[in-house]
Image (cartoon, rainbow, N blue to C red; front, side):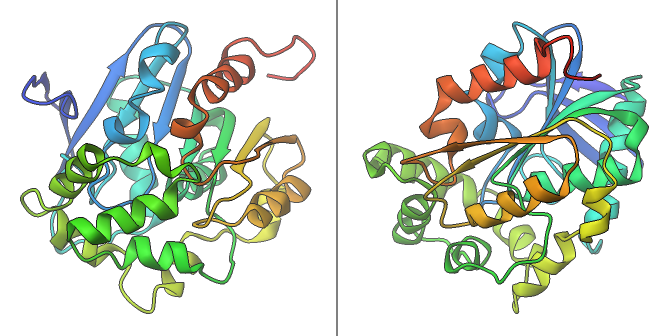
Length: 285
């Protein structure tokens, strides 16, 4: 196991060898540990997904935000067929290497499904769960998610994806589109991305889905967060999870799409702190 820092780009932070994989991960702050698991957009990295969350949250807790296998600056053997068990095992490997016994997890979209899979497989390693616009149950794939997973690089396609992600299109400017497009064509990013969720992409939804009884069995306090106008993961999915997960509550943002952490950044960060760092004494461990 080796770890060292890189300063070439804000998206690149610490690197660590876990088995055959090299993980890029951010590690900031002190205290109880919060693991942030990003979504599955083209060119996404831990930093790109959580750059509005890490600075404020790391003032109150220790925040770990990796690039997941198949994404960003993390690398694993190209012939591997990535699936939830492998993603979960890589995260457990990272926590073990960092000697972290227990974490709370914030999972976004695809990352929400991986958070659920980790909580099911290693319940004792998880303290609390926050699921934001999370996959993790079976549902008919949306046109929005089909567009995300079927992305073919062009500036026009990236702008179209941004318009799917965000309710407020004033957030989308040429600089942002160009930055995310450049990220999606860096090195081998697109070839790796194309392998993750091939057509028919409904199979990707099913791969990430847990059984309803798995959610009923979760012992963890869980906060579901969703944008009412989400075109990628439908609000109904979080509503189903709310009914299934015993110790769950839900916050829905109106006039908000799939980018809750960007469109409602301040309120989202407050929710995280209130639920993960300052929970009421009677709210359970």
